Amino acid sequence: MASNYTSATVSSILFFLLCSSSLFGASMAALVQEQPLVLKYHNGALLKGTVTVNLIWYGKFTPIQRSIIVDFLQSLNSPKAPNPSAASWWKTTEKYKTGASTLIVGKQILDENCSLGKSLKNSHIVYLASKGGHMGRSVNLVLTAKDVFVEGFCMSRCGTHGSTRGKIRFAYAWVGNSETQCAGQCAWPFHQPIYGPQTPPLVAPNGDVGVDGMIINVATVLAGTVTNPFNNGYFQGPATAPLEAVSACTGMFGSGSYPGYPGQTLVDKSTGASYNAHGVNGRRFLLPAMWDPTKSACSTLV
Image 1 (cartoon, rainbow, N blue to C red):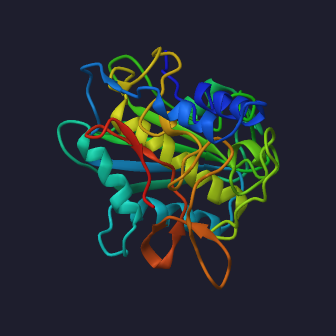
Image 2: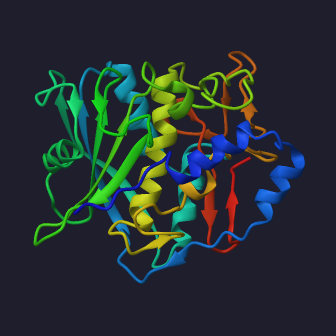
C-alpha cells in the first residue's frame, strides 16, 4: 500500500479556513506562529546521496513547459546561480540527518497521447511511475497535463508522493498542472485563491501560471520524498496525513507571511514577476518555506 503525501491536504485546508475566518488578522497570524512545530524523526531510511529523478510526462506539455521544470530540477544542484538560489533552498534538506540529497535528472518518458485515458486513479499513477524503473536511489515523478483529471486532484491535493511495497520498492511522486482545473488552490499565489481574501495574484516568474504553480508543488513533494520516502522519516501528525518538510509550512514564501498573504518576495522590475530563488539558465522561481531542523521553524529564502 502506497503512503501518500499531499501538498494541499490538512495544512492547506487549515490555511484556507484561516483565510476565511472572521478573526483573520495579524493577531491570528501570531497565534498560529506561536504553536510548536516539530517534525519528529521516526527512524526510517531517508534518500541521501545522489538521487535520480526520472520524469514521466503524461499528456501534452510544450517544450518550454518541460524546460522550466527540468531547469528547476537542475537548479537544485547548481552552485552557479546567485543567491538566493534554488540550490540554497534545497540545501536545508542536508540538515535532515545523514547528509546531502543531490538530485540529478534521469530519463524522461513522454506519454503525450495519454495511454491510460485522461481520468486517472491512484493505481494509474503508480503504474506510470513504474515506467521510470526501480534502480538504486531514485524518484519517479509523474507530471500530468492541464486536461488530465487525477483522483483527488483539486479536491484534497495538488500532488502526492509515496512508495511501493515488496521486494521491488521505489519512491514515486505526482504533480498535476492545475491551470484549468483549480489554479486558485494549486497555483496560488499566482491565481486568486478559491477561498479567503481576494488579493491580487502575483505575477508568475516564468510566465506560466500552471507550470509555475507546478514548481511549488514539485518542490513540496520532492522535499517530502527525500526526508520521508517510506512513511517513517520526518513528519508531524498521523502517518496517513503527515505534515512534512514543506507541507508543514504551507502558504509561506517570504518574510512577514500569514494566511492569505505569501510574504515579501523579490520583484523583477521589468516584468513585475515575483520570485525568491534564482536558478540555471537565468530562471527564477517562487519556492515555499521549508522546515529547518536546526531552528525547529519554517524558513524562507527572503
